[in-house]
Image (cartoon, rainbow over all chains, first blue to last red; front, side, top):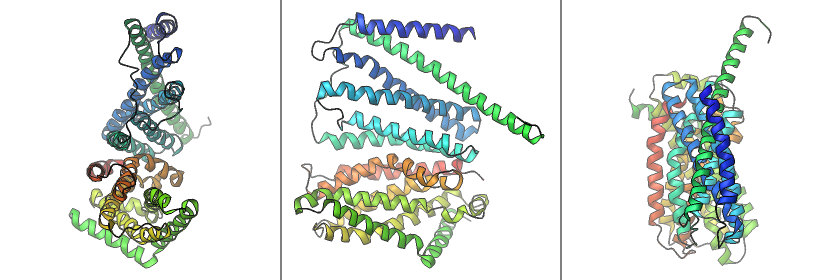
Length: 227
Length: 225
């Protein structure tokens, strides 16, 4: 309990400090101007998004094999967080692309893959949330998440080849960071990953408790009680 | 009963029911024709535009018909506990999946074979020189679709809103096949600068193989009694 409190405090400090570093400490990029600051949120969000989907895949795989509900809870929590951070990526991306590339959206490999990835896990989430509560649905959703994993590779290859035919200007946002920018970026990344881990744990426990409450309720109902 | 026997048995059962009622096949063909008309109304223009939109229309047709067909895979088993009986039987589940996949592939191929020439005629695209290549591509694409869609169609048995959820689940998963199909067909027809369709064939073959193995691997674990 104390460890969690300490981590929450650390995360709060980290997020605040990260914002200060991003907006005050890091210099304004010469070519793109203040818009480049989006990068400090965009890239860590993408990392958190991937981490969430990886958690979902691992949880689903373990659930299919062990059939223990807690793995399913982890998978669902991972998918939820992956989706939230994925949405942040898909919103901040166009915000950056408009001034940098002159268009809101471009069928660029990374963008397209990310959009498809988010769609796949959105399907998982919708299925898990609205498909019903039976074990069949959970098992099916888990299989879907595992099924989607090799697809990440195929989507990547297909989209890359598809757009590889029309050479695009690659964005070099990540490569040419000055030392001050690098500090701000790393701080932002650390703060966001910590936030992700805390939220994941929280959601995971919430799902576990929700299931426990559901089971208790059913038991009371069976015994003729009223809830 | 070994794998091949179970496969043959389930295939024969499904094909017999289908050939007696012909409901799925007739519905799919009619649906494909309607789609063809809709696309033709939407696009039919000068020959140049037609040639450009042909790959997209062709593959959209495969996608829509495939989804409709796949959604019907377990429709007959969904009633009267037939699916439970099928799963509880000592039959190899992978063989059941394989048979169902083959039935889906067969139906999609029949529908595609019937509608592609009609589509070509309506959009005035000459396919006579490239029929072999396009057929191979359609086969690989339809196979990819059936391999991904069939195991997921089990959802119809135990999830609510399955008829809405299934396309939502399947479309993003078959996106690589769709991209490979549309771009590959375009490169065969010569409407894009890149004229070599081979990488797209490779991608489709790889996709089909992964989901052939993956489906067999997962299906046993994803169905509940």
